[in-house]
Image (cartoon, rainbow, N blue to C red):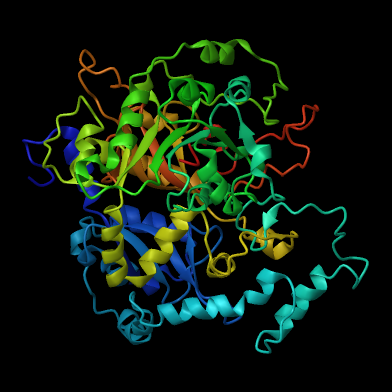
Length: 589
């Protein structure tokens, strides 16, 4: 049964249309030359029915090309390569064929085909050099690593090809050169040496460990709980890769969600070397199966609960490979909680309310009364075990993973998902670069080189160049329940929301997160289940309860303050209305 089948539930039809979307690259038509990216994205969506996510930017200084996602203030140059979300490669060709002179009045996007304009035909030859799949992509990546080693380390090496740039870096960072340079004693390192992630001085794991009473006394809210099953000698799974995207520098410091790891401290101690320079991490030495430990870390108030296992599965029975992760998930769903924190949210109007962690108490959402409403994602080794995660769904045990409710709702993840990513990368090498940037929050070849050397994240002094790296977009969610875009939740079309969000706030809508309507008489979690609709059609009807996935611009209106959260008045900095105002919800999800 494909999309549109009458035998499928309405949510499955909408979801399946989204799963048919894939990522493609195509050279953008000369018609778009000189347009701002936002204008080009709007034209592609409205007239061509294509979602333009990013473009390849060629710097004026001749340095390596970079992929820029939803760039702000960038104009399309000739023969620019665009990254699109579409149903087929045939659809994406419209981006190259589009000609304002010939296709301006065409209403049916399927009629946009190659025309005989001389201007278009003449530029076709020059565009062949920038076709989507480039065999030199690997070479490009290596050259980016080599060329930036000096800037990353912050000191000059003997490489002669990049001499002037390194002399500039050296003069900026050498404390003894001129009086105008950085004062090392008074300057605090806030970001890593590439400026892509928040950084802090090394913290010992002993200083980060909470016991159950300390955790219970800490007003944890809007945080991320990591439930980790591991033996002391289990293989390392790389927790840094989970936490780093939540520490991307395009978040402001007070926006960073506190991460609480619940698990065996003997195992976490082995991972700690890679986590010690990332801020706002706590460890509860306990068990993810202990309800007392889960209550102590306020799992009902978290923005996300991630369930992982580092244990090596036995070869006896593959069904048992995920038993602990599944038990932990079902255990949380079976819990009930009181609503005292939610009531506190409404009755406490103190302007300078601070939590013991030293950050402002911002209760993003009312606490879940039922554990089944706790936002949760469980990692599975065996795809077929997804059937045990949701006790009240109607999925057939033989249903493919991507068609199951837990996967569609984002509550289950399996390693096999990476197989499709590998396939995509084989056919389009640039796709991996874009996907990696979206998922990691900004991993760069320079940073990968540093991490590969084994030294871990290194702090760096802020320079205009590294601070400029903060100005990049990020994935976020906005609500149509309230706020400036709420009017589009009252029966408007998706195209209306897309255009308004792009024009007014520079936000690029990429999909919807819609409530999965169920029979509430048989399901306690009907109100919390949502599923993803990737790139809905232009005429798709919106609902007030919808949430929207967007690529939102960096908001420079909130400066970092070293004393943020120390309880002193005046620490609060108003949020700028640019980039979505107060509608930023679940940015780290």
